[in-house]
Image (tube, rainbow, N blue to C red; front, side, top):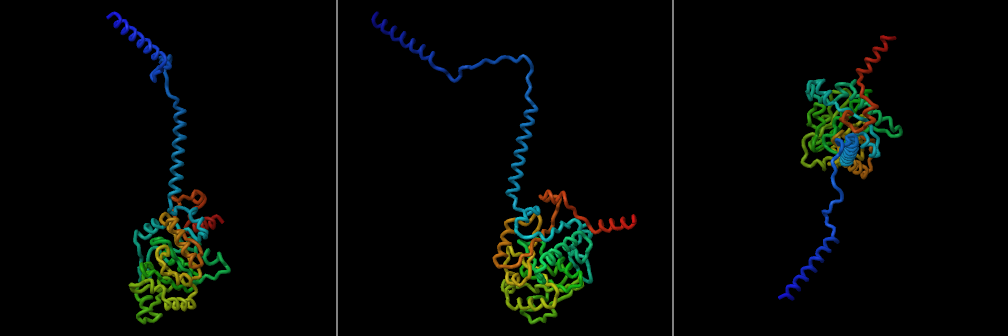
Length: 356
């Protein structure tokens, strides 16, 4: 028994010694490196440093979001997005929505010579407004910017619907007729005809009756409320607009009227979504593409221009309608240019005469 007890004692002593040695050679994760000491004075954070860091991080995030938004934004919200198209900006037509509402007490039509014409027909109703002056600039850039090109037949189209092509066509026709020229304006949008509404004319008789009902040409050409401007509407609805737009008979009719008028203005369907007017576009001397500010997409415009280039037509340039400099992305344009009405001009000249 003594031997057994001694053996057990030695075993336990050896294990105890090994355990003590193991503990001395291990470094636990929780071993303290230093001990806290109470501060001798009150402590407060470095507010200036934190404010500077916050301003820097906030500015960096803001700039990043702004660049990201601009990169992802495809809406034409400034002139810069048109300059890369490769075509000149013929005119910038200001947003006249509030102006029209105030002037005409929110009426969309007014009576002129027994017709209810659209209040958007500025060249007829308000020829000394800044909007009309913008359309004069469009006229000048079309007629005089290319002296070697005789432009008598002008077609107006757009990438999509609601982008101002009819309003542009009507006001351009009015400016062309100011100097006593004879102008014919034709509605070539057989799917969504709108010209007759703007002019305050009846839709029938028109092109369809001329082609299929044997109606005489003189019976479908009508005088408008604007002296010197005649119109040719689409006529009744067609079950097959594409075949009408591409008919050889219609092309020969349009060719025939060119000799009877000084200018022919064609209100075409939006070529960005409808290609019916391709044959008529090839007959035109030049094409104006109407672009709606803050609506038309850059990819839609690019595709429309590419489609026009593919049929080898003469693109005169772009007309940006509904421009609002207050929300435009054009910093330079906002700060360097203003719209002045003829009232400002008249006031200035009157004051000058009084001083003289």
